[in-house]
Image (cartoon, rainbow, N blue to C red; front, top):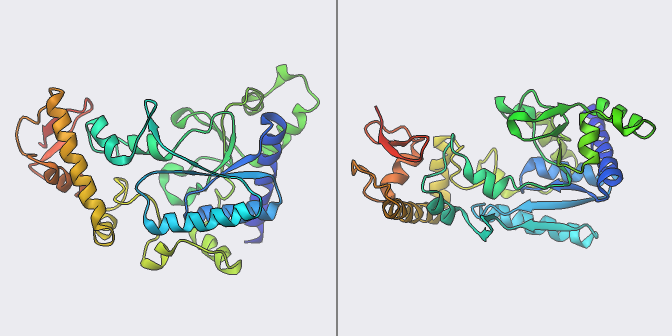
Length: 308
């Protein structure tokens, strides 16, 4: 545990120094209201670095999450630390999850994650941003490192030891010999930092308990992770739990799917077979992990077709 903390502090210190030297701005701590964000925030305070905190408004976070974020942001503001809340936009206009579904014309799914791109993973161009990604969370997050540059599929990963060495060398060498990550910083392109990348779930909770860190009350309601209500990436059992705890959100999705079907029809994308006569039918397909036999699926062009 001690080694994990020391490594995370070093990562944050290196990231903050890069942000100051090359970007002329404080490090950004991306905050979601979850346990990983709370640990990362506590570590940033412990590291005594200059930073700001950013929350990307998803419009479908739980009331408990929003309450926790307001509480934490007030404490930070009282300490003189700047906090920011980004509001999502789509093609220059304000947007929320439900109007986004209507505009996209298809529900968000595991394979079509436009909701994350628009609502959650807001880019922070020309900044160094620390996020609470951990390799133990999923297979897709393995194989990364503490420092990342570039977009998803083409991203490059660097460990903190290497980053520290090359940035120390960059202080005395000609920029023509810059390695990729240093050149990225000189150009002030986005850099993502993972301070708690090697932490396990049990280590996160141990650190929270040992340091008496306030956390989102959803965890005491049985949630192992917090995020968007009825997230398409969630397990079926997790979606069913959300239906019970947040019944009004189910109705909002059904209404959004009704408007989506109407928009599709107006745009010449009628659903032909008639198996989805309303938003409730779309919702049933959507909540069942999109695999109900005899119902429908979306193809790559956003057209609806029958399941084989």
